[in-house]
Structures are given as structure tokens and as C-alpha cells.
Image 1 (cartoon, rainbow, N blue to C red):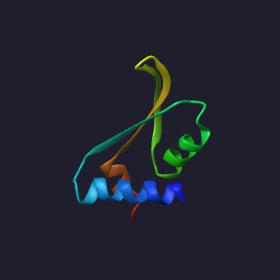
Image 2: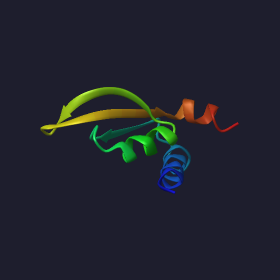
Image 3: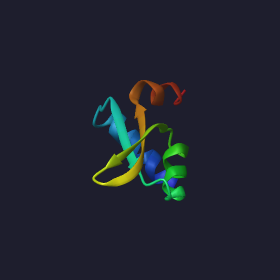
Image 4: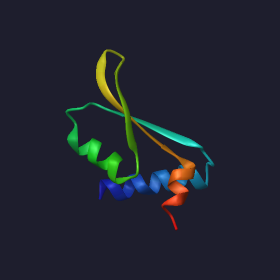
Length: 70
């Protein structure tokens, strides 16, 4: 269910809000959140320190999302 909610938020961001790119940050130990982002079409792009915490950065762009809708 969390992945479906995330997919709905992604669809809203790319359609109603017309955003070009979304970025997500997740602590590596939070495997459930990593899976939700991956199931929602996000790609892991790097691992960084954000505000003193280790994090995976994920991104998804509108053109890639659109290509998966058809």
C-alpha cells in the first residue's frame, strides 16, 4: 500500500504540478522506504551525508515517468 500512495503522489507531482524531477532521501537502514521509492520508479543516484546523516539519494524525472505510463 505505501508504494501505491507514493505512486499517486508522483503522478500528481508530474501531472498537476508539472514538476520535471523529484528527489528522495532515505537512510540506508530504512529498507522499507528504499523499496517504496524503487517500486515507485525512483532510481538510486548516490549516497551522501545530509545534515549529519548517511542517506541514499533517489530521483525520478518526468520523461522517464511518462515513458512508463504507456
